[in-house]
Structures are given as C-alpha cells and as structure tokens.
Length: 317
Image 1 (cartoon, rainbow, N blue to C red):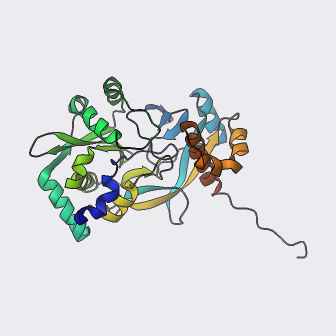
Image 2 (cartoon, helix red, strand yellow):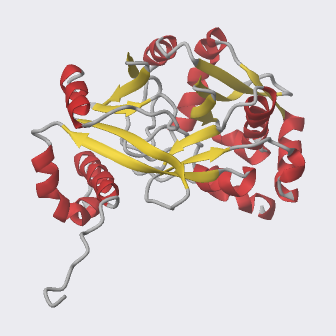
Image 3 (spheres, one colour):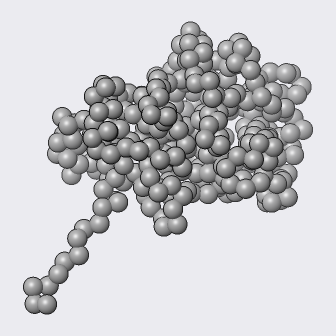
C-alpha cells in the first residue's frame, strides 16, 4: 500500500484536465467559434479562449461587449501577460523544454517504466474513440464530485464528432486485454498542445497508466514535434483536482502566471458587485446554484487582485 502513497490523491478520483469555467469543467465537447483569427468556446453562457494563452486575444471593453451580445453570453474571460515573471493569482500549468526520462525523479522514472510495461499509449483515431470511449468516460465520471451532468452515449458521440479539427486523441490500452482504459482529448494549435481533457478508468491508476500516458504525450509534442509547450490548462476553481500538483511534482510542469480579464454583460455586472461581499456565505452554502455563484465570485476576487489601491498621499506633504 505504501508504494501508492504518492498517488493516493489521484487514486481517489479520476484525472480530469480542462480549461476552467472559471476553473476546470467536467464535460465532453463544447461549442466554439472563430473571430478575427482567434478561437473561442462557449459554455454555460461564458466565452473562454480556445486559442493558446500566449496569443494576444486583441480584446478591449468594446469588443468584449460586442462578443457578448453577438453570442448571447453573460461574461467573457481572457488573459494577457502570459508567462510573466511576477507571480499572480491566475496561471496556466505548462511544461516547456524536452521531456527526458533521466530528468524525472527516480520514483517517477520507476512508475513510468512500470506503466509502460503494462500499457500502450498511442494516438487514437476518432472512430475508435466513438466506439470505445464512452465506457472509460463513465468509469471516470462516476467517481468525480461535480455539478456537471453525465453525458449519454448519444451525447458523447455527438460531442466528439463536433470537436474542432485541431483536436487530436490519444488512448491507453491494457497490453494484456487490449481494453481501452484511458483517453486524452488534446487541442493542438499555435505551436502548442493543450491537454484539454484526460479520462481514466480509476482501476488503471494504481498500475501507473497515468505515468505512461503523460510521459508518452510529453515526448511526442515536446520532443518529436518541438512545440513551445504543453498545457494542463488554467487554475482550477469550480472543483478540487490534484492533477496540477501531480504534473508539477512528477513531470516538471510549472505555473505560467498571467493577468485575468473578465467583462460581464451589463445587466450581470451590478449583480456581481452586489453579491461579492457575501461570497463566503455562498462558499459555505449547499446546492448547485450556490456553488455556481461561489465560483463566479471567486473568479471576480481573482480579477480584482490585479487592481491595486491608489497610493495614499499625506495632506501634510
């Protein structure tokens, strides 16, 4: 049992990697659109960039309001000053440079090797995922605490078929049985790769399927294809996840700090400001609606962290 202690947080829940709303979203598929060469996604009336965070979204207040109106959304979020030197309260978790097994700790190297002895991690075509992926999705979802709704087999197929053409899939198969035990949905654009979602059957975690998949994908995108970075997505707010800490401690990922921008639809903005002083109450309250409000207000707290109070000047000077 002690040999799995380092992975106990992951064993208690399936790994899920995604762009947050405002934190991570437990979902399959999404709506997206392109505007002036930039790709956005819409989820629950929120607009979030799909283009990589090092890209300049070229959004100001007027453009943000136009996007909200034209796409009937309540809020829009984007980032600037990506991978800045100064720590902030908003970040993406990324890895740059080469993926070298010898650079990992002795413990991680051992787990990668054990995982690769038991599993094959390789690109997966869309047809294979449509046929086998829903079973993995269900196994992962059932052990995850979230307010998101489970997707049916029909909904799963439709969502996978409608993903952007820049999407690439990877699968992990048990060498002994040939069974698919994990899959990853990766978005590849702007010379970077975003591990948009990774779903694993929890029973495969203790046999290090995670290690085999992450190491193989890192090697493919960072070494073979020489991409700028691979990303696990932004800071998680909407649910608890151990994946960021896991990738940082085991695979050399790091926080790439950025500035968070949020613009609300005009009718929503005063509501957020009225509710903001009561954000601790919503954090403690039970229920899906209260949880959503708490997430919204936590995002607002992070947005406000980028504004410093003016320096007070003494009248006696």
